[in-house]
Length: 239
Ligand SMILES: [Cu+2]
Image (cartoon, rainbow, N blue to C red; front, side, top):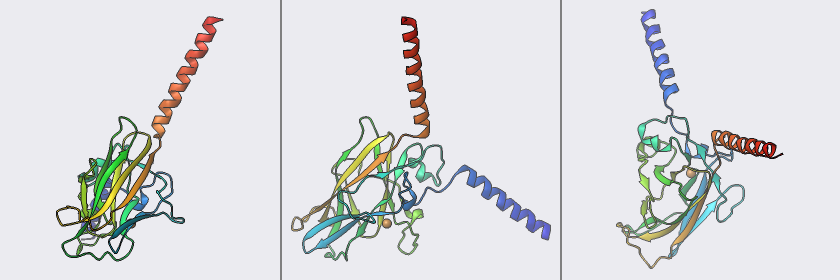
C-alpha cells in the first residue's frame, strides 16, 4: 500500500518536473517588464458628463504620455497552453491595463469602445496586440488567464474593441529593438461600435521599448570586432 502510494507520488513529481522543464505559463501582466520596473500601469478611463478622459497612472508620479515600458524577452521559452505561442521568439509587455478611473455609468444601450488610431515602430518590425484580460482568475466573471483569448486585436488603425469596464491587460509584442507606441481613441458608442457623438472621446498613447537581446549584443560585438580586425589588417597592409 505504502509502496504503491510512493510510486504514484513519485510519478506525479516526475511528470510535474517534466512538464515544468518543457513549458511554463507566461508571466502575469505586472511581471512583464524587461527592466525590473515591474507593476501595472493603468490607463484610467473616466466618463464625466459627456466627456471621456484617459489618464495614465504611473506610480509614483503621474505623467502624460506614459514613459515607455521595456518589453521582456520571450526568446528561448515554451509557453503553455498553446494560445501563448504568440509570445515566443519575440519581446512582449502587458503592464498597461485599461481600468475605470471612476464609476462608469452609461445607458444600457451604450458601451465604451477603444479604437487604434496610430502606431509607431521601427521600419520592418512586427508590432502586435493580443487580447488578455484581468490577472486574477474569477470563474464567475470568466476572468483570468484561463479565459484570455490571446486573439489578435488592434491589428490596424481603425480597429475597435469593446471594453466591458473591467481591468484589461493586453499583451503587446514586438520583434526588433527600438521604440514602439500605439495610440488609441476611447469613445462611447452603441453596442455595435457606432460612435455616439454626444460624448467627447478621450485619447491615450502607450509606449514601449525593446532592448537588444544578449545574443544580439554578442553578435553586434562580434561584428564590431570583425570590422576593427579588418581595419587593423587593412592598415597593416597599407604600411
Ligand atoms: Cu491592472
